[in-house]
Image (cartoon, rainbow, N blue to C red; front, side):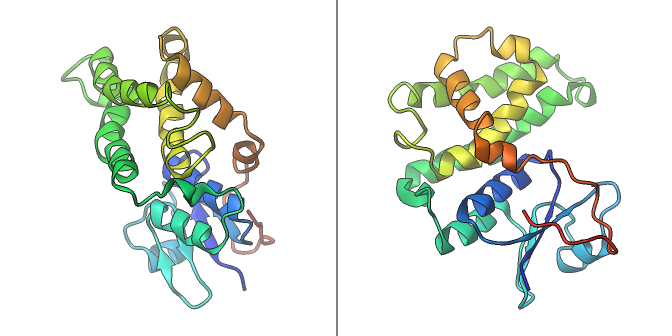
Length: 211
């Protein structure tokens, strides 16, 4: 029996988990969910109700996206994503800033009408501090840790994609030229497109879908 991944196509956390699993080549059942109607099977194994959630045949559960990435790549890493040492201090700090600082401003920028304390441009400016940091790194290497795609690129780029898509005209009018190129390379990759296929929400009676 294969592991089961509960996922939501547009969630950046779920994206990075799917990318790592797909890259690893591990056979995993995919269950696309609807966030407003989460299946009881998922909530039974992970009551916090967020995706992604990976359940194993032995009932082990992994419900943090970075842990799912590491689980997959530590078993098989054909694209050498772990070569940049994702537990190195600098890499950990970058991913931590993405997840716990930048993500806050991303949400407020994207859903600014829910945060009327400031205009949308204010939240965008706050998020730009992280964009500037990435742009500076990308002046030295093609990707965030070296000349090849690595763990940190995959962990971070779904969030930058979401930020850019909030106002594409603005993003591509900026001077973040290296960041734009980096994002385009990742978004246009065959791997990314392979994990962004659209599936109907999972139903118990339907045939198994594999990632």
